[in-house]
Length: 334
Image (cartoon, rainbow, N blue to C red; front, side, top):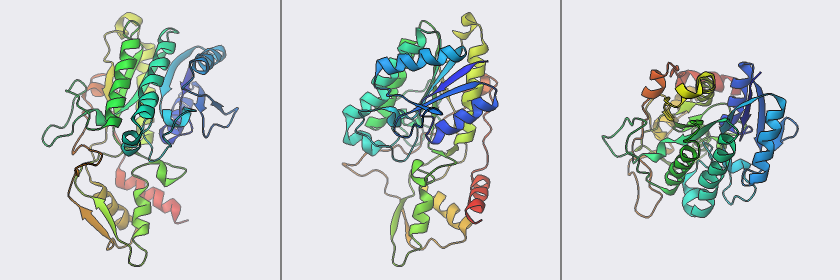
């Protein structure tokens, strides 16, 4: 039996990754920090090299440890000044990163480098979740291939790109580091605020209040992707890379990307939610202004190409955004 170690196992994506590997018959060891509940989820500070090495060695003691999946560093880091907000890979909230660049770098870069060194020297495959925000997202440039020119528009994207470089540099000799870039995620959540998409359901509810007025971005293109689909892809990558002989594995691509093809703005998503819920959206105003001077700069369109995954024979199929939310809202109405 193979073992997978999942950091951020209590987070939005991490929970689904645990389920995906469990369904595949793997032994899964999950870690967290702020929401860890031993013994089911181990409490590990990913800012500590000693704790990282201990959990890797302990996990190997159960069964051969083949994969370490790195997600949601922000909830696995004892000294972080950045608090979990709207979910994603590591600290996925750009405003928080711009407010505290040093903490963002510690989370998204330094801890990732430490993990990469520890896994590579133990012959463990490392899958690192990155972001579409490594690309500039200028009008007319997307879709971006895995080898397209990177130019992050904000500190969050830069620290994630630095994390990518650290992972790939540490694993260059072994070929055991893989980067998976994903866009904004949605899915089954303990609280809507775990996801920048799920939380829009709260905004729709907010404008049902008397005299409520909410401005919602109707400028930037989003490609919301379901966490169940991303978790399935992570599992498929783990199987592909861990089953490939070392010599052949060196030739496999080290940067992969996965995204839904559903293009929409945040305002458009709110329109979908309102239609599904059967409520008006009169109190919400579409904001087409785009980036404002002095604010955190966000890309216009960072659509990711799935080409590299398709060439590996890994399915890039995604479930219907509207269909998933119709089922989710149906559960709310019980």
